[in-house]
Image (cartoon, rainbow, N blue to C red; front, top):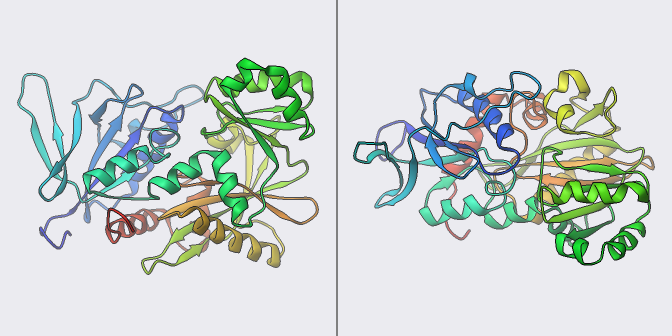
Length: 374
């Protein structure tokens, strides 16, 4: 209950969004809507349509599921429009329906943004929440923006002394102006190379270029999703391992047991199908089968990465466990996949924090955190 009003804590669950990860955000929302404690929280589902319209979505977890290959959920843009407004007490929601005056839904105590990719995970909506003076789950503007942009993330992590894979950044302007120069620049990294949208996720737009003959198509694919592209050395022979990080109420940092993803079948890397149809394409080890000293180092590096970027609430840190026994940070996600089958919740379940308790923990962290500079 809210101490100031005597009512249940009102949570706006915001999902969908304008990025290519719209459907995955909807899937995540379905899981959270099903798991959240309705005796403690008054839940208001807010969908952001692919064109950016905010609507009052159905509070129905079954609407937000992947029902089969190519059958992805989406926010219903035809539902009643909703806006987040600044009120005397903080922030509130206003619903506008045809042939009816706007109606208030009441103040919002905390927002749970379940958005992946640009216009949601990149600091943009976090800035809106800050300006509206409403508490929200997850990292603030700067940490969200840095973590979303893989090129800047690498700069920050390297400056903090954390190991990263060698890479080059390619912009659409550079590629259009002088593709030969770009080819020469990335060739210096050595093949094979991974080419990915700098600010993308869910493995959308990623390709592996084994030879110079494949680099053009790989860059064009990534540029179709983002005018800024990261070309990175492939971690050949590496194992993909991950660790979850949670902030504690006293401001400390806790880490989960590590996990490992092993790709099966014809998938050469952890692509979209392998991530979201895992029963067919991946095998997961939670916890990962690692030497004790490597697992301990991985958890320490995860906490360092979380602190270096200035994260809050939660993050998943992904690593390459190289054939020589070293660990290299691949990336850091401030809003990782968050269905019960996703790696972040699975790692915390193996550490002793079940999914519903994880949702409650994140909301409690957000409610204890002030808005504004901190």
